[in-house]
Image (cartoon, rainbow, N blue to C red; front, side, top):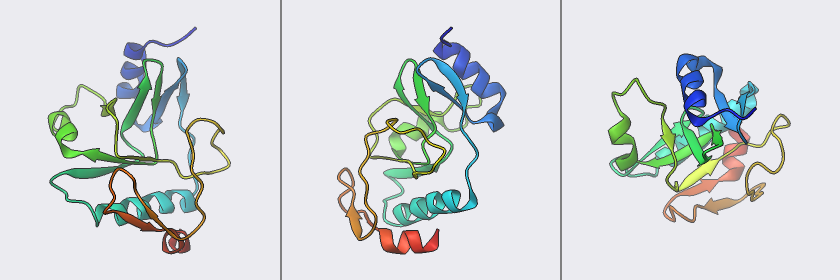
Length: 148
């Protein structure tokens, strides 16, 4: 039986350590990741944050949710969020940090535990990548992967 958005949000709020996602109406706990996976996420977020105007954008790592539909909420590894969307949520303890608006960047670090087909993917194994929605932000993948 599919889980409603209200039930999902209640479960996720009551068990914040559980890292609950909603996938096609089914509750699932985001799997634990390796230290290498987590380090790449932190390093990516740090590299992006250094290049952003913090009055315009912030970065979330493995915490905020991206709502793709009423039956799918994901916890991406890295999100870039406009601060205008974050501000109304600050100081609130009664709601999840969920973004249904289009975001400049949603990144998943590929790992063997993730299902294929969950996201539209672009695979880059090295070089410099410019972010389409944030063209002044560049990511040196060779340096990033050397750290992780």
